[in-house]
Image (cartoon, rainbow, N blue to C red):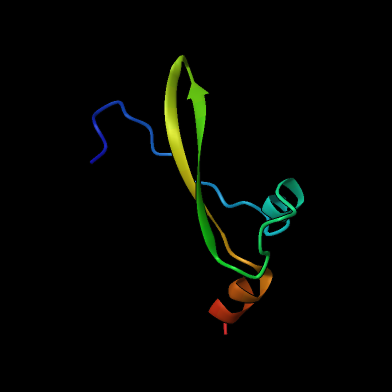
Length: 61
């Protein structure tokens, strides 16, 4: 639940970003990963999912 005054951040990464940064990972796998970021002096764990391009196009058909 989002607290009053809290922040909800949503973003979509380009499908090539994760494989470029981590070339040893399997591009064709849909994977979740978590990274820590600091916003306004507070650290937040942000979880993202890497969907390969075929997963994005298959979802739209």
